[in-house]
Length: 83
Image 1 (cartoon, rainbow, N blue to C red):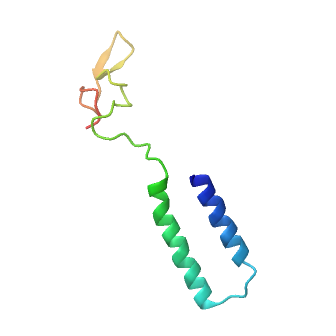
Image 2: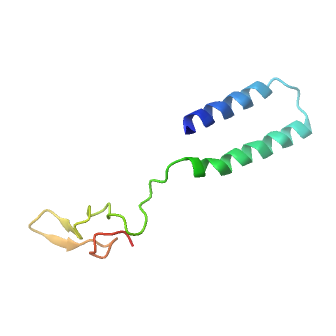
């Protein structure tokens, strides 16, 4: 869905580019662009892990290392879950 929003936004801006420069039109475009940019983060998926999710650094093990050397995972504090 976000791809369609970007295409729609680019098509809309591209259609208005041939109109002579008008201060009110420029202000309207600025406001519409700001509205779309504020709305886009709500549309795009959030890739950040949330508290309680499996720690991406240690993959939920609680430690990092090669098997011989084990060090507690610092981002999750050794719990395996995102704080």
